[in-house]
Image 1 (cartoon, rainbow, N blue to C red):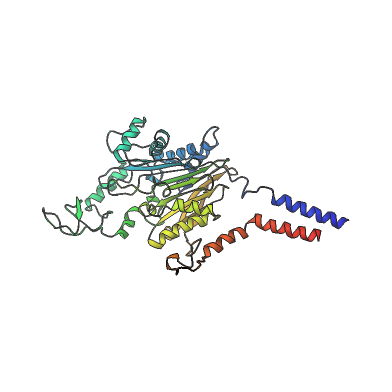
Image 2 (cartoon, rainbow, N blue to C red):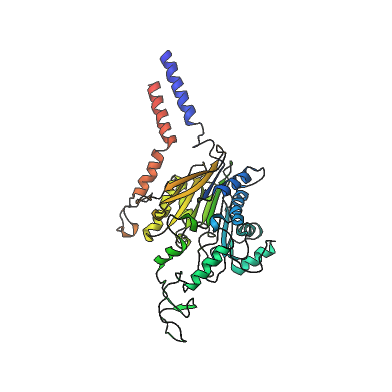
Length: 418
């Protein structure tokens, strides 16, 4: 009799455990996560906004980004820093709502400091996704944002710019061109040399040299992008990104930050991701979207970010970039290309009294998350294609806690009632 009762108690315990909802960490939501070593104040600012009654994750990421725009994080985020070839600072920004998938973004915004606010206005007051250039400035003015009468730079950026000019505007981001003067204008190198144009090639004619301008691997002083992801207790998610892009970029250049899926991406059903680094390359691969979709299939945040960067490194081995990734259970991680050596970011959850800095080593696994062993294009007609992606999907099912406990309950039932 006692053994029978013990067996029944075992079954009840197993059943209760299996059908009780579980999360990775009861205190993981809400959560705010932010890029780079200067993310302490933006993270805490976004967190405070998220905790204010009636405020949304969208409000939180906007506030976090605004802190950097107002206080010039890293002496590089915000108006007046990192001038283009013409000596003007232009800004890119994006906000995205994970519930509605609405996006607002601006690119090449001139003479306006609050780029993230203008991006939010694009979302709120238009049916568009992205507004760029002088038209973005006019839109900002119509929405009540302050527009400066003249372009201006900080003293540090102004000195850097004129030093660069004195060096014949070298290095720069142009390639396969000839300059008509020390600093241009430039024309294709294969055109005839006439009108007293200089016939020597511009010194900067290979894309690899660009790394000397936009980034020094491992050096935090040259980073100018702040990414903020916020997920509320109800799993509503939002991402905000703001930047003034590359120093000495070609006028009119827009980077990855205002491109949905590149600079940032969120989906309430999954979570969110944001990227920082060489935007000209990143926007070709949509790493934020890639990471979110991998999480949709059960991949961890860290591994999803690693795979997104691995995919870029396959084509651009010298690429430098990093990502923050978080799912809607509050599990988070980051990934970075080896050129960075380490990557710092900040996170804050309900069990923290202050934002916490996390530093990771930049290593990327060689193998993709879902490797395909047989390319479909090379498969003879009439044959069955098998890939390890399928077996990996099965492993996700077989390794899930629900599946394992269901099997345990069945075995327990067989044992108890045999």
